[in-house]
Length: 187
Image (cartoon, rainbow, N blue to C red):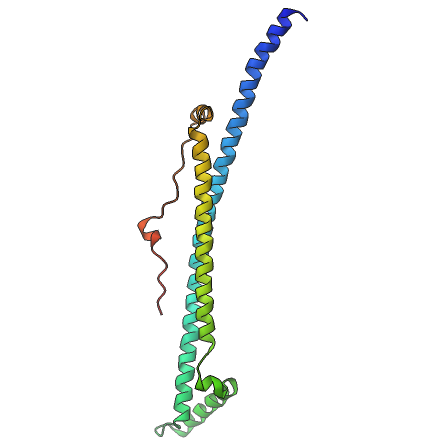
């Protein structure tokens, strides 16, 4: 084999391999950047879920608690007798309501009010726990992806490619003071 062919192959190898390495490294960094952006979106999804689920659950539990409070108050009134100041129409309406209540409430529940609101409160507690765990997982995934990307950006020789394509380190997730506060649940 002539020496000029060997020189051409060596020169080609010295050009082709660095170009291929540059392209592979750049693509790797871009894929990591996409993973960071995707995991950041996961935090947004988790925060939205937190707001939506907890808002709906709290409103549901509030409604159930109010309904059961009114139900128990009505049963108590019914047990103590019909108010004497009611008109005959009011008494008839009251009796109709009490008949409807009586069909849905048994004596054990009246004596020991373990009503559905308790199940709703328990469900709310489970939902809060689930939503918070989902949010924590999203934050951990984001920070893990940022750590991998930042490590690659600052490590030689990948740092050369990162500098050439103007890739900057990403910030780790740190909640703002307002976002660090938990959702306020008021009854």
